[in-house]
Length: 541
Image (cartoon, rainbow, N blue to C red):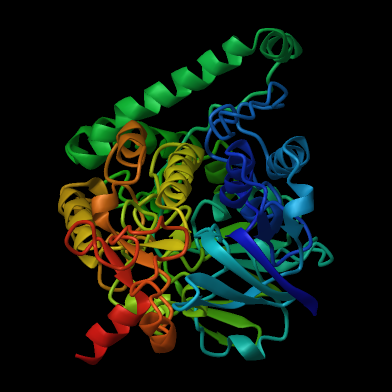
């Protein structure tokens, strides 16, 4: 175990969110930080997902940091290998390597009320930090359903995010469980080599053509020589998606025309009417994420592919049994069943000011002020938190907005001076989330007639942002201190002997000028500043 290390900021995770936070910290002049990563390299979901055909469904020039443009993207929609290489490049270019603590999985972090800091235990050592930025991401821990008999399956089983590259699928009978974004890339990639492929489909997705092509040499040369051309390209891609948002969030019926185009896309590749019927969704397009592929439907039409329009119910020996009773013998089962999104795996490990975990606080649904801070967890913020996801654009835009909020949060702590913490007021968190959920009711994700991974166990959409990315950027440009309580280290007990000798009767809080009553514990405005000892007294009362 490494020795204990104290830092100003601890960043958890090294995907786009964590590396973006690290770069922003350095650009703000903050170098006293670490990036705690459980794996042996950076990359997050683009490190973990290496299945055949893995690629992004957002155009490359939009799916990259605005402060780190890449003129050399090879395709309009780049694959996993190139995106991971981009993240390694960002790590090197902005000097993040010295801050990395690889193979340091966070096992527990708890708020130290007396010291106003976080105590962090990891698999590689212990740390403490004034501020924690959690960037573990919603697509980090695979979700495999609890299927009766699965443990006794004699063949190979793995999730798409934990692909077993040593297992040869050639000639094998394979069951693909799920029809999400990963499955529609995996199916056409493995179909030519497997003996038989059985797709177990609970709900068919809407799939649109993927307008993908190689980016030419002259284009890349132009972007290198004249960087504003790449900026303009990114701006156009962003603008088109901003214009689409109202159809998803305010007028779902406008998506009917796009549905007709999607049905035409099915008809072009699927000539069998029965199969076409099984592959046509019954819910409004956009209710689940719209998927992009030119090869998915052609692969399903091949003679070695069976589409079972029913989810996996149980496994009996080497036989997979669908909910409709269909039985199929297979050699391998591949799960493309998504991730723990609405039940963040990090949540049980984060212990707040009241001794309860984040998971306990969020048992009825995730809530965070401006998608970043949670009530009861001072100086803790998350990147890609509740209601910051997107259904039609690039998450990098949302990440950069949250980095703006993080930077101003740290500036506010600097202005406060001394040892201080900001605690999101429950009233502010509640008001923000009531507003978000109210807007969510008329979106296609709630009114579109489907069940999706956007929804939690209570049917609330705690995943997506019901607005434009520019609106979210405005909402997270600065920290509004009225939404926070300012916490100070409790003053030390008075020395009665010294007081009798003429010493000051009320020592100022750390970092506060002498005679500043507010800094010494009296709030400058009602409820603005609270000491730890006062909070304990209030709890007893």
